[in-house]
Image 1 (spheres, rainbow, N blue to C red):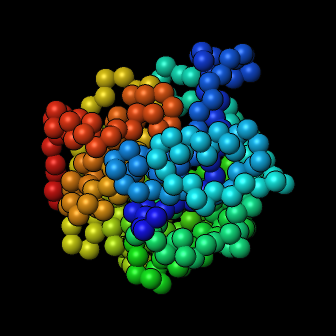
Image 2: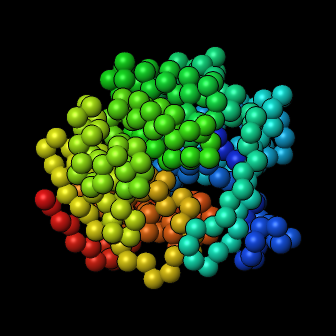
Length: 321
C-alpha cells in the first residue's frame, strides 16, 4: 500500500438489530450488522472511492472475525486491526422503530478495543495516511485509548497533516459531564476541522447559537467548524467564510443512527477532493439524508455516482451570511 487517504480508529462492534418493533426484552429474532462511528466513516469514504483504513483491536472470537470480514467486504483496509487473545469484542442490541431514535444497549466494558494503546501505534503505517479522522468515543473508553488518540493526533499535527474531529458525545461512558467536556474540548481545539451537532456544541461550549459555538473553536486555532442542524441542514464558519446550507427533505425517517457519521463522510470527501466548504457541506447533508432512510448504521451510504445523482435531483438552496 503506497498511501492512505483517510485513517481512523476506535471501537467496532457487532450489532444485533431487532427484526420487529417493540421493547428489546421482548424481541426473539435479530439480524447481525456492524456498528461503530469510525467504521461508518471508513466504509462511507471507501464507497466513494477513497482509500480508507480502520485501526483497532478485536477479540479472538466470532464477532471479531465478522468485523474484519465486513470491513474487507466494504473495501476498508484492516491491516492494523489487532486480534487480542485476552479480551472480547464488544457488541450491542438495537431496537427497530418506525420513528424517532432506536433503543440501544451496549455490552462493551473491558472490550479488546478499549485496550488499544500507544504500544499499538505503528508510525510507519500512520505515515502513509493523508488525513486523520477522529471522534470523541475512544477518549471515553479507557486511559489507554485516550493516550493512543493523543499520540495519533500529535503525530499528524507534527507532520502538518489535517485532522477532523467529531465529538460524538456519549455521556454514559464518562464519569462526569465536566470530564467529558474538558477532555473533548482539549482534543477538538487541536484539530483542523470540528464537526459537532448543535446540542453537542451547546453542551461543550455553553453557547447557544451556531455562530458563537463556532467562534469558540476558531478562537482556539481551529480552521473550520461545521455544525449539524438536523433536518435544517448545517452551518459552517471559518476565519474567512460563514454560511448555512439547507438540508434535504426526507419523506420518511427510518433510522437516525449513522446520519452524523454519513455527514462527516460527505464533508471530508468534498474537502479531500478540493471542493469549496459550501459544496462539501452540501455533500454532508445529502449523505445524512440518505442515511436516515435506511435501516442500519451505514447501509444507506451511497457510492459516488449515487451521491451525485441524488444531489443533482434534489432542490436545495444555499444561504450565505
